[in-house]
Length: 262
Ligand code: ADP
Image 1 (cartoon, helix red, strand yellow):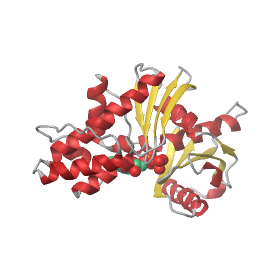
Image 2 (cartoon, helix red, strand yellow):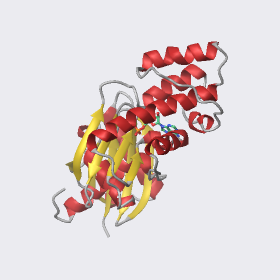
Image 3 (tube, protein in one colour):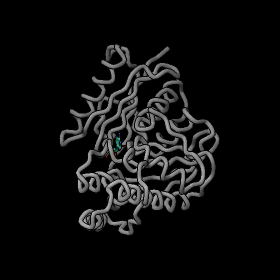
Image 4 (spheres, protein in one colour):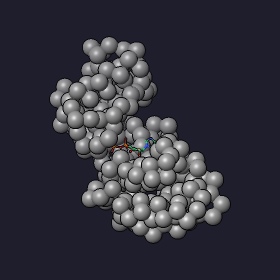
C-alpha cells in the first residue's frame, strides 16, 4: 500500500499527517514563523520521524492551508476548506457541517454525503471569534491558552461578555478583573460569546446535523461545551481535529494518485 503525506501550513501552526491506506502512521504539529518553507520541511521531517519511515517511502505529498504554496516539494495543492470537509467526512461520515476555528480565522462549511463542499462562510477579517481572541483574553487573565477551557467549565456565575472586538474584549476582561470577578466566570462568558459568533457563521450555510468541530480551538473543552449548549446538540470532536486539514490533504493525495479528480 502506498504512503502519502498531507501538510496543512496554517497561519500559526504547521500540521502534517502521514497516511497508509486508512491508517494514520504518524503526525506532527509545529509553530509557523517567518521562514515558512523551512517550517514546512521541518513539519514533514517530524511527521516522518513520528511514523518511523523514510522520506523516500512517501509517494505523494499534498499541501493545504494559508502557506500551501510553500510546500514546494509537494505534488498537489488543495484549499483548506476542501481538506477540512474531506477529513471530517473520513472520520465522521455523517458530517454535514464543519466548523473550523483556527488561530486567525473561523469557517463554517456545509458538505454533502460524499464529503464535498456545498457552501462555506468565513470570518478572516479580524481576530474576533478565533483562537487569537482566546489567546489575548487568556493573557489578560494571566493563563495559558491550554488551561482556559477547563477553567471555564468550573464557572458558577458566567459573566456576559458583550465586546466582540478583541481589543474591546481585552479591556472588558480587565474591567471585570478590577471589580474582583472570578476569572472562571469571565472565561465562561468569553467562550459563550465565541459560540454565539460561531453559530451566526453556521447559520449562513445552514445548520444540519451532524456538526464536526475542527481546528486547534476544538482542543478546548470549554469551547466544545459552549458550542454544544448554543447548538442544543453535540458536535463531533476527535483527537485528530486539529489535524483535519492535513488529513483531508492526504486523502485528496490518495485520490489523485489513484487517478481521481482531487
Ligand atoms: P492555524 O491553522 O490557523 O494555524 P490551528 O487550527 O492550528 O490554526 O489552531 C491554532 C489555535 O488553536 C491556536 O491559536 C490556539 O488558540 C488554539 N489551540 C491549540 N491547541 C489548543 C489547546 N490545547 N487548547 C486550547 N486552544 C488550543
